[in-house]
Structures are given as structure tokens and as C-alpha cells.
Length: 76
Image 1 (cartoon, one colour):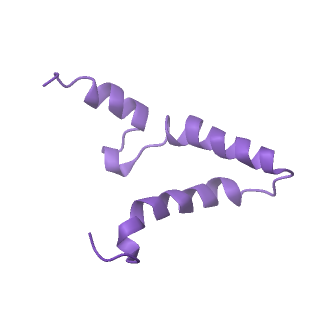
Image 2 (spheres, one colour):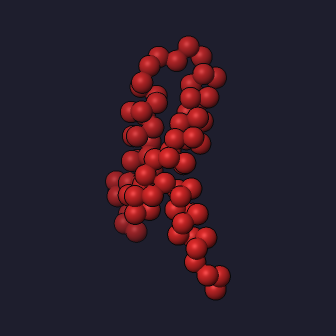
């Protein structure tokens, strides 16, 4: 790890929040905070974790990665 404050320390988190901001937060004006919260929850639980392919997982969706890769490995 590098020193605190180095932009490379938080690269993964910054990438996630940039994607969230671009795809959900700035997509349209939100009438209420609850509506925005619901949209973020749906984006995260339905799209980001279940369908979106992640380069860190060899372009598998997290659910697919767990099913195909992690569960197919024999227990050590």
C-alpha cells in the first residue's frame, strides 16, 4: 500500500461510485430521497451484483462467478 491520500488506494471504490453516479444518481432528478434510495438499491442488488460483468472477476457477474468458479472448486 502507498501512503494515505494516494489516489491508487481507493481506485476500486472510486470506480464503483463513479459508475453509480453516472448510471443512477445523475440519470434524472429524484422527487424524494426515498425514491433515490430505492433506485440505488435496485441498481445495486438487481443490476450491479447479479447481471453486470466485472473485469476483476474475469468478466463474470458476481453471482455467476460464485456459482461457476467458487462452488465448483473442491473443498480444501
